[in-house]
Image 1 (spheres, rainbow, N blue to C red):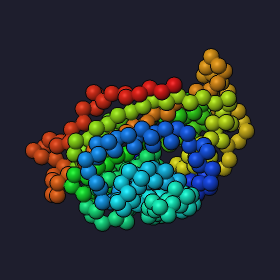
Image 2 (cartoon, rainbow, N blue to C red; image 1 turned 135 degrees about the horizontal axis):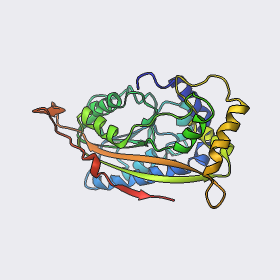
Image 3 (spheres, helix red, strand yellow; image 1 turned 135 degrees about the vertical axis):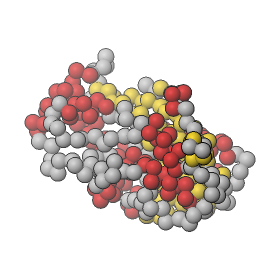
Length: 294
């Protein structure tokens, strides 16, 4: 999807959301907690360099610094105000570095990172294989990649409601778990494991959902988006299309699909393919849904 996103808009949206982000990011916090659980696979290791890409307000970076006090932990984000908020997590007793940079062009040396962590950041990139190739470049052989992103069922109800209002895109496209597995293989990662959760959040009305998305910085950043405000007529049509979906409690549902991926850096010079076959094979049809949350 080259050119899908307006990255200046993405930076502005997350910069504006930084101060109130933690209050709105309940789902993001839950996903972060579940992703951090996978660090148990590293209990027998002491990483030297740990990087949190798309760190937001820095909670995961702080947790990893607490887990590995001797490690150099780097919190990296596109939005400087997010890093300013992250400073609150980096106390003098367990400080971590904060770097303002783009996930698409990591300012890190080749083979310099032992753990690369990224929670709900990759849905904002156009070329997933290229970004993962960049992640592979900076990861040491045997280093761990641990990431999460949103899948295509995310905000399906909102997408369909706005489709009834006009022909303009209002919800970003999200890579499927199969596409994510393919991108990991294309980048050359080893022994990938993919998983997913489905969350269902509810809201009293469409404006409440839209307010939460703005508070999260998750606004429409598509390059092809309508540049003017959504008119009252279009919004009313979208709200009317959403109404029949109200649940037994009279609330509007919103689906969020979260994809998790864990993989390992290959040995130096290891090919992505060998004999025409993928070395890193992901049996997508057998990937389980680990949890289905209400």
